[in-house]
Amino acid sequence: MPNNNLILMQKKQISPGTRLIALFVFAIGIMALFMTINLGNNLHYILWRRGNILLTMVIVAFAGSISTVLFQTISNNRILTPSLMGFEALFILIQTLFVFVYSTQGTFWLLSIIKFIGETLILLLFSLLLFRWLFASVKFNLNLVLMIGVILATLFRSTSTLLQRLLDPNEFSILQSRMFATFTLATPELIIFSLILIMLAGGLIWHKRYQLDVLALGREQAINLGINHKRAVTNMLLLVSVLVSISTALVGPLMFLGLMVANIAYLITGSSQHRYILPMAFLLAVIALVSGQLVLEYGLHMAGSLSVVLEFVGGIFFIYLVLKRL
Image 1 (cartoon, rainbow, N blue to C red):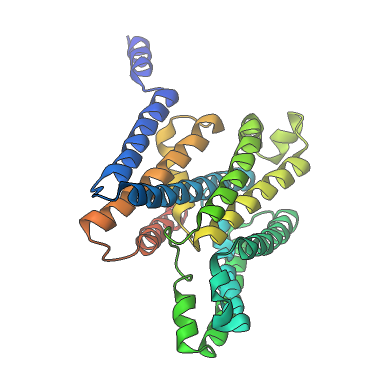
Image 2 (cartoon, helix red, strand yellow):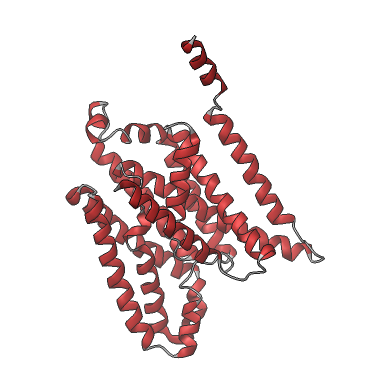
């Protein structure tokens, strides 16, 4: 009789595929609501602008969620994220240096594609050097990695603060608009360019989804199963670096989005296979960004910033994860 009850309970469980389909339908509904609510008269302009914002949020949702899942898979640690390693502080330092050097005469370049490519390359180089060193030297020791991230972020922020104090007030006000993540400033050229890069990276990651399942077992098990662990991890770190660099250069710093959606995806997916975890984390990130933007625009009448709310909630979630491991 107990065996029959166990079989019945297993049959009643919702499969990961069904959960994924349900979340996909919900995400499509949220995006449709965002595009159609309070349209007004000027449909062409409103739909074009909302479409740009929605595409930006989808790109950032994909980059933030997928890069976090990949990073946690190869590090075998669900509390680490690429964003904790000082990316946001480095991004702010780059913005500060740009305004400091070019003054207000070059502020129209703040959203240019040339500057976007330059920022992406700088962040990519930084991430590759840092992640490769972490993997080769400290073996992703949690305490040491967090300490390194805090030290680097403090160094970058201190340098940024020093330069910001030397700026003209008008220059600082222009800089301040790029110190927080915003989804409304990206130009169509940047969005399309980022979308192409994201699609290429996404195709490669999906092709390696079964390899990720093996890497999640650990270094020794992956090697025993025939995986070239060093090469596989290096390739994944490269993809993580590309995704994080694109997201940060496109909208600005978002530290805890990936951490939240990745851990929730592990909880609700009902499977350890990355063919379910990756799209689940992506859909959760889309829902979080789009629904948050809807609440801020039509519930709170823009009385706040989506990035600030995400950082506040994400910071609490991160503290909870840290305390849970103690």
